[in-house]
Length: 395
Image (cartoon, rainbow, N blue to C red; front, side, top):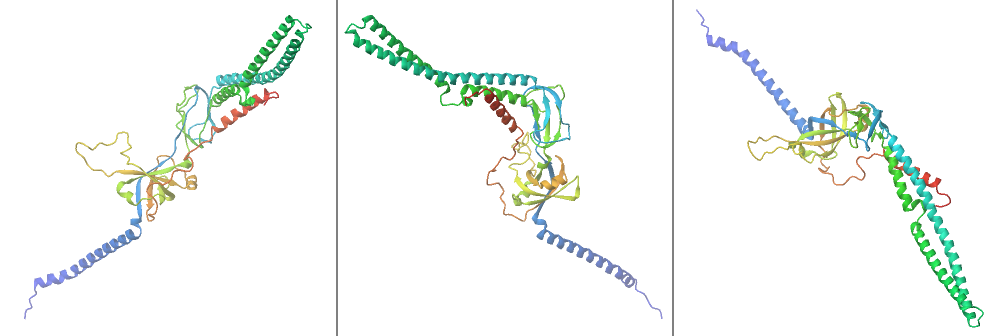
């Protein structure tokens, strides 16, 4: 007896194990996909949706330009690119000879003025003494006239002598009036003032102050503490007021300007914490920051040539808005950043209580320097010394 084998049955039996393996593989891939999607959804629900990120962020800072306040010739340069300088340190020295001569002239003029004003005070004292003498002379002349008038009738005094006495009385009255006018004129120059506050002395003191500041400004100082960059000045160069000589960059005041898409701004609030990484240090170094301000316009709005979309073909482009992020000064000191460096920014937007715009104005200046304050104080001290040296007993 012969047994017949069905070819289709053999093919189905051979294909059954292969189909089972493919099905299991597809199910495994689907399970992995579902798990990955579930993990992403969980991550987004609890973490991802509370973070806004961008790598379009760069380090910014104050670039303080050093410029002269007076004209002059450069005779010394005390700082080079990359050097650290402190506020008040002399960076560039101009030729001080002309300013020094002007100061000596102003000092001599102030001393002369003080002595002249001392003479005005003395003139007032002398005028008062002269006025008292003239008053005494007038009383004597009046008494002489009265006495002679009583003696004319008896013939003891002639009419001519009485006339001479009356002339003397008139002269005494005129002399008294002149003395009063002279005293009033001299007193008007010094009345209700001390010698140091007398207008002529103050005018001469202002000349000394201006000349002293001119001399001090021949030494060009650093307005802030920082690092020198972009030195342009050269020895022997004749510079004018306002000419850029070099810049000083205070790196400890650096901040980050992150350019977020306008579609990312809805959750950003002032004061939100920020994590940052710099390309120079990599992901191993993280900076802590705080969202300090949201830009008041897009980069295109403040560009030199703003885009004009009112005519022609137009393609919508998502705009970016600059956001300022303040950095931790201690972290900046430990890991310095340079201006223009690239940063990656991750803002935690879980806290939505902060404002979008600041509600109060600053209570103190945002930036301030005391590098020039001592110049005026030294000028005032010099003036007081000159006045005291020529004051005598007047004050």
